[in-house]
Amino acid sequence: MGDGYFSSRNTIICTDNFTYEEVLKLKEILYVKFKIVSVIMKRINSNAKIMWRIKIDKLSMNNLREIVFPYFILEMYYKLGIK
Image 1: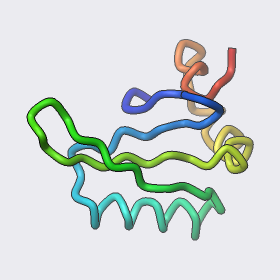
Image 2 (image 1 turned 90 degrees about the vertical axis):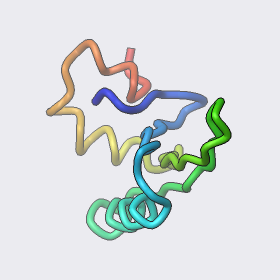
Image 3 (image 1 turned 60 degrees about the vertical axis):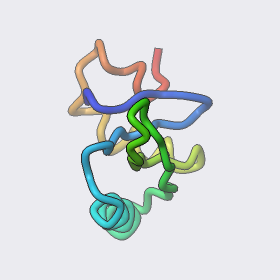
Image 4 (image 1 turned 30 degrees about the horizontal axis):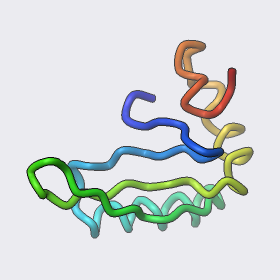
């Protein structure tokens, strides 16, 4: 629940401390197991370090919400775009 945010109808999962290969594997698992479509975003921090994040496709947001909603606490609903 903690490492991510909601922006422009998408949830971004902050996987900054993982390698590209690990993030790619997570992206593939999200699709194979849960049919969640996502893309990998490149981010460069203030120290010029390259980091990778997963952006859930807006068309998969309902699927994501259905899967994780029962496990989220009320204070974190905003990360799924739920007010």
